[in-house]
Amino acid sequence: MAQLGSLGHVTLLAELSVVLSVTSLQGSPVRPQGHIVHNWKARWFILRQNTLLYYKLEGGRKVTPPKGQILLDGCTITCPCLEYENRPHLIKLKTQTSTEYFLEACSREERDAWAFEITGAIHAGQPGKVQQLHILKNSFKLPPHISLHHIVDKMHDSSSGIRPSPNMEQGSTYKKTFIGSSLVDWLISNSFSANRLEAVTLASMLMEENFLRPVGVRSMGAIRSGDLAEQFLDDSTALYTFAESYKKKISSKEEISLSTVELSGTVVKQGYLAKQGHKRKNWKVRRFVLRKDPAFLHYYDPSKEENRPVGGFSLRGSLVSALEDNGVPTGVKGNVQGNLFKVITKDDTHYYIQASSKAERAEWIEAIKKLT
Image (tube, rainbow, N blue to C red; front, side, top):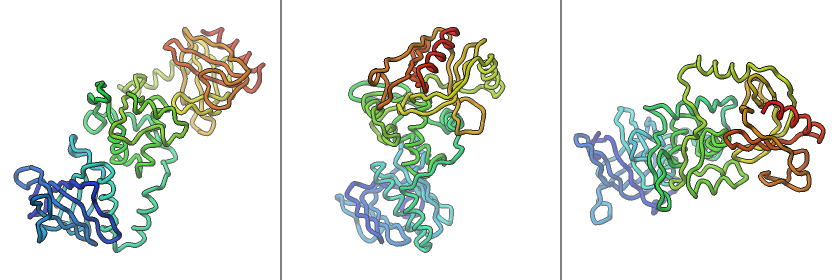
């Protein structure tokens, strides 16, 4: 790593008083890391066209002339940069000569503002690329065949995954948790999402499918929102943890063996029913398949070609009952009423399901009761 005078790693610590414009970005103290001694120094940065200037600070003011500059032509930028575990607001710049700079902002918002403007300066000679960046900043397009299981496996990776740690909220300490904004950074850094909007929606999907769960007042409060994009908080005060239902795969053979056991039973009934989600509480049509020996109820997404269930549960020790038809029953979200029934599993998970008629509801309840 280099001192600012010898082009190397730099930490950018900008304050909320930064001034953004089309041609320049001016910010406050940045602490560069020394090339020999890996320390961090506060420096004042100014972005002008394709050059990033940096100044020493004395008495809170920049000292002219500039201490040095970073030529952005041919640079590559990495943001978020997760190479320093205890510094979540880093930007990494790598010049054409392979010199690396680490710039540390004082907040996630300011880091992203700097990264966006620096990226625009790097591609200033490519109008089409700059226009694409502006579109991408607020665009939303998740990969069509994204695998949530693959993402969760990567999150549990001991070397490059999410590392839960104790976090405090409102005087209470929660063990093995991580903050919302750090997960968003991780999803972007690992190319699972192109921007923060996509990452937040993807994180909400992980919660809806019971891979993650909120912890504490801040994140629990967001779950009450009906908007998928607002359920997961891209916030440094919102806490989350891995759901207990997640089990790390020891081998593909064990995964196949487990699926084989669950799906090896005899099909006794199947059909289309509506099911309320666990997190978002929205209703989706699913194809339900009831099996015996062993007794399982699985549900499939009819929009997917692959014949694998998207969820399911053992019926051993479960309870099933019809819900009242007058008004919206307790536990049901939205104006959904009529032909509803509920299954409560042995571990006290509640599934709310709607049939197309009273007769169909009665048939499903009777069939399930025989296997509980």
